[in-house]
Length: 142
Image (cartoon, rainbow, N blue to C red):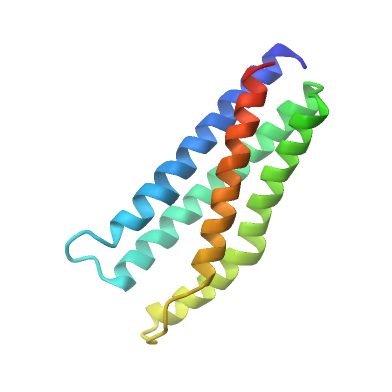
C-alpha cells in the first residue's frame, strides 16, 4: 500500500476512534449524572452531540475509504474498512431513526419505558470500536 495513503488512513481511523470513545463511552453516560440534567435535557443534548458526531464520522469514513482504495490496501485492510463503514451505516440508517422517533416522543412528554434501541446502538458502537482498533493497527503496520 502507498505509505502516504496508509499514514493518512491510519491517522483518520485513530481520530475517528478517539471521537467515538470520548463521546459514546464517556460523554453520553456522564451527562445524565450531572446535577440538574433531566432526561429531556439529556436527550436534547445527546441528539445534538450525536448528530454532530455522526456527521464527522461519515466524513472520516469517506476519507478513510478513499485513502484505502486509492492507496491499494491489502485485502484484510480493505475488508476491515468496509466492515467499519457498514457498522456506521447500520447505526445511521437503522438504529438512529428509531432512537430519534423515540426521543421525539419523550421530548413531547410521553412517559416511556427504557429503550432497548440504545443497547443495539451500544453493541454496534462496541463492534465499531473493535473494528477501528484493528483497522488502525493494520494500517499503522504498513
